[in-house]
Length: 275
Image (cartoon, rainbow, N blue to C red):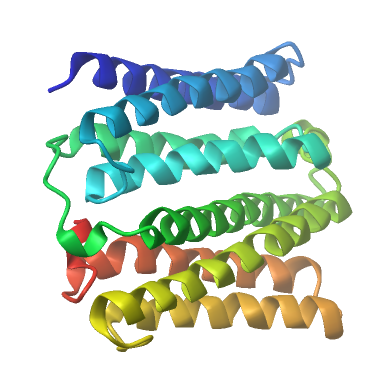
């Protein structure tokens, strides 16, 4: 086990955990001084995580995204980056609090899975690998961030309906701000997801001689794409907002997770080598 790599990744996990703790102190104890700790902890965690990723790539002599451990870590890295980018444009103070649990889950899961660097299959030695993986994971990261906004929306809506206008209610953003956050993440994530699927299709034509083979991963990628395409269409043309859009975002995120992990762990197919 590479002690430098493990230490860097463990440092990122520690900082993501600090973000979550500070965020919940801000939410439930109403201590505003905890908020900067929450924001800065994700930034510092991202730096540690990026260094770990670059170290892993150097050790593997390739883009480190070819097995379960590396995929989990890379997704968490891009989720942290998506948070940093979105939080600059859409100021939602509690977004880090609802993002950090996902960062913790995926980084911890990566830490406890085998770290062995396995030889890269010949099929993966292609320019299309980094392009396809980066686009797909980046799209999923922005859409996962939108799910955090959707959860906050439903929570705030519930508090309003129950007329609980004290405590956590005062720290969660207004419903309109949360709906705007959800829509922003959809507008950022969906085009990236689309390009990821297209690049994967082109890569498949070179690797396996066909653009589409209805492999389980491809099928569930299409299902996920259709869910978010329907959501985007509904927002742009049918006025879908608020609760309906938030519920569909959460359903879409569940489809992302099954496509990313459920298919690889439970089903067999052409993408089984990323386990």
